[in-house]
Image 1: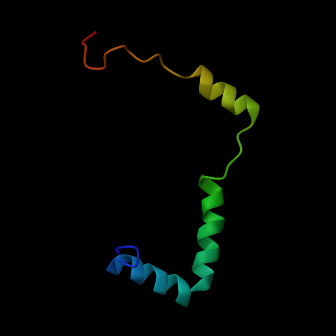
Image 2 (image 1 turned 120 degrees about the horizontal axis):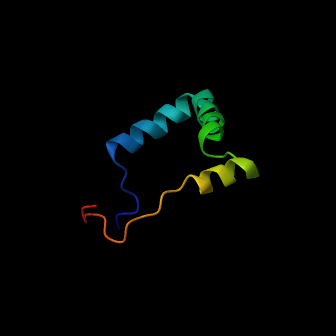
Length: 62
């Protein structure tokens, strides 16, 4: 019943991307810069070593 509803924002974005195909290509390219990154093993080891132990109860004063 509600599967065909689209908000005005969704309609706008779909139309905008349809009218500007280069923007859609650029979105995918930019996504690769931030999200689709493979970490080197030494970088990953550095992140693991930098972790701080979590307290058992967050709101307990030190």
